[in-house]
Amino acid sequence: MKPGPYPLGTPDHAWRAAHLHFSVFGRALTQRPFTQMHFEGDPLLTHDSVLHAAPGPAARRRLIATYTPAPLLPDAPASLTYHWNIVLGGPSPMVAPA
Ligand SMILES: [Fe+2]
Image (cartoon, rainbow, N blue to C red):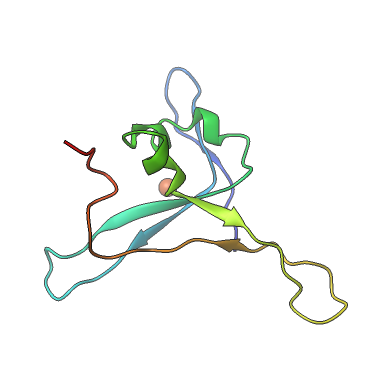
């Protein structure tokens, strides 16, 4: 399911781009990263203040799923599908390199 955008209710009438929230449970309560996945091609991506809080274009790009249309069945129209990986471990995508 693809959600719709929504207004933030701020004085500047800002909107959030369509996105999905993800939370991954670890072995302890403190091991629970949260993130958001956005959709490639969304015209609101350039205006989304939460997406632009990510430190740099590479970090922002990692928060945007790639549009990957594929037929679900032979001779069926392409589906509205996106590809996005959640990578656990390694350097944090939300921390700028020193
Ligand atoms: Fe949200």
